[in-house]
View 1 (tube, rainbow, N blue to C red):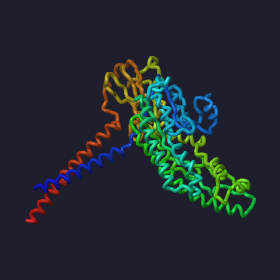
View 2: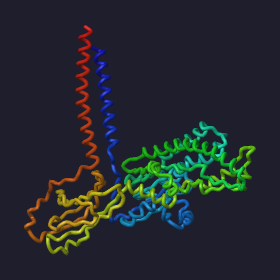
View 3: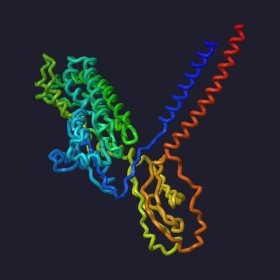
View 4: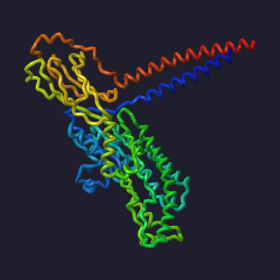
Length: 485
């Protein structure tokens, strides 16, 4: 009997694990859109933090930004992403991004807010949106410092991995223990963090133009470049493994207040031509002349002069088009909208006149569906469903005094609820009073409610499966004992 109890216990534990796995997988598979709404009275405080990508390195106006004569670079992705929001909801965008910053330097800068010693602490804590791009320099610093040694073979792949791993460990400590906790010190703030893309996916030494004015030397150099390219590709593959570890840390930080824009995943889908359009790194811009060839010390395998020229042509920063592409990826993950009543209700002459509405909507992934409701003393009435941002309803439908609001859906998922507009409208024709205050039309369940329904269904299925399997096992066990006797 003791053996039978142990056996049943193991069966039970196995089934519980299976049910838990099903629940976890189902909830992870549920798509939840990130959304936000800012009322028209809000003046948004938006702050950009990070490295040279956030700072807009290489773009027009960057020099002024560095000299602090400009608040933010016009075509940098944070400004392209959020200036529409500011235009509609009001406010300002400021950038505190610094070219060359790694995670430790940013964490050090943010310590003053963590320790509450900053003179602008109140401003920081009242910030609505933080954009964040950090982590690239943690990896690039290791790569650039060891590029020549790796190509020459004076550092092994294992030694290089140790250095990269140290950089990743430091990033995780900085990001998880300092950067994110400080930026989320205000629980009402939204942090929008991006993953780091691979800037050298299509970079190859074979694109380098060779023109030493000597056919023999050209052949020798092309052969050397081909060999160096193989080493470079191996180094890049190793580097990207560790970049992915940094991206995993960023993705795992996703929560209610942290939106993660997976820029890396989207860049991986781009063609070679698109990459060249979005990223500055392009070795076809490099030419090896007779002077560069003569400076190479072939005896000691010293390619320092070649490497220095090479680094100038592998700029990892986005072009202006690249910044706009990254900004659009951010817009897909973050939306905001505002409902406005365009018609003056006091000027309505007939209950059949149209009341005009306008929805200012920014961001989102696809076609939006809007649902208009009125709320009178907590009695909610569905008024209209539309895909148009300009729409109207007949005046008699607004009978009463309360507020109006809109829900927005994308692909059946509710993105959020708009601002509420207080209104009051008295019917001109009392015959319309027969309209009920409440309605059978109710909004679609929110994502959270849908998750609870899914969870309840999975638990029920799991319990039924457990009972069925338990009795099958019990029957087989009894049959086995009977045969044995």
